[in-house]
Image 1 (tube, rainbow, N blue to C red):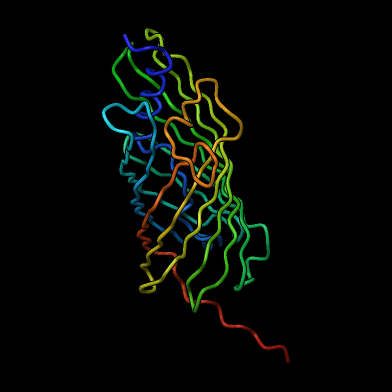
Image 2 (cartoon, rainbow, N blue to C red; image 1 turned 45 degrees about the horizontal axis):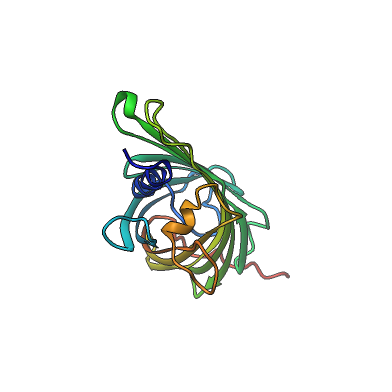
Length: 241
């Protein structure tokens, strides 16, 4: 049988590769108009380096997710999505004036979960993230988006196993740009980083991750999103008489 810390580490790796624990935002900072929708297909690669990963010290895995977003009010947008074995749901609330075309400020909480395994051997995972999205207009309909975030991850090992739960708080940021190709289609390249707040009891996150700038436990994600809908032309400015 694997030692408890090694088995827990492998459970975390399995949890991450379900695609539940994304590190990016992959969305604009402004909200969709009421009744409007957008479909996001998110593709990315996540990377980790550590001494306990098996035959090698480097591990990379793909992340794939699909999100459906819809405007509820001028300031509120809701979303549902799926990422490999996980399901997600979220909201986005715009904090500044929706008519401001140059700068958008929003908060976009999201929760997700996954169950993998069979019957008594089922393991579970939940994640919760809280990004603050800051968006600056780029050209006619594009937008630069900075997304500082805090994130929580917890595993729920099968009751029949000797693996202990893994719990982690982390902080990080994403930076990307929404690039319209047409009125109803756009691309969004994005780079994200995530680092633990404090240390978990097994130091598993540090084992998974490289040292970056002298800081232990940094995971990297590089992605490209395909946005369908949600790129309307900017509203004309009304001149005061």
